[in-house]
Length: 171
Image 1 (tube, rainbow, N blue to C red):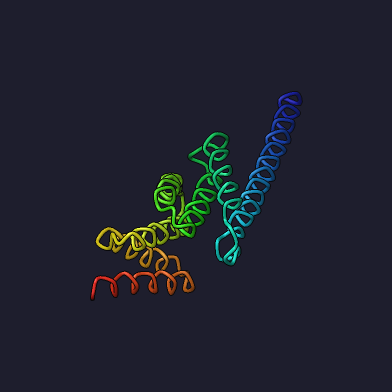
Image 2: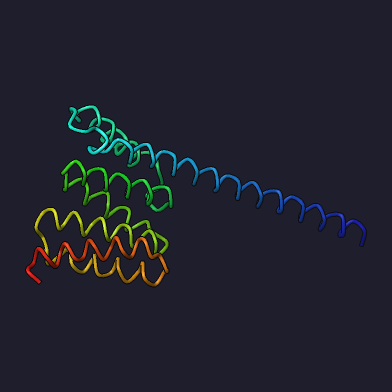
């Protein structure tokens, strides 16, 4: 009886310790992802303000190569970084790479908020390439998802993107 109780207490302590460690590692990975995403987002053409973006382009391309090679494609980190890269490529007017990364992000998304952000970005890429009929469903979905999530700022942004699309179609 006593040995079993000691074993049970020991097993509980070990499993609790492992759980806490896993939670810390998950939080650290999220912080690193947000930090790196912020760095990539900060090297946008708007920040470059008319300067040569060749180095910027090289940094983004290298980040994309490392992401594809080193990060689990189904992870939250991959979803977040692919979204950031897709957005950055859109801002660089490299729509082919933007679509590739946004589709990878969409495949890895696990939550409505992330999915809404990806769909809005993908809609903006399609809008920029004048694929208006393809852009509209993504933008409508982004509006609906942001509304359901109670994300008012995101919803306003998605509605503005949808309005751009509808205006471009003459509606």
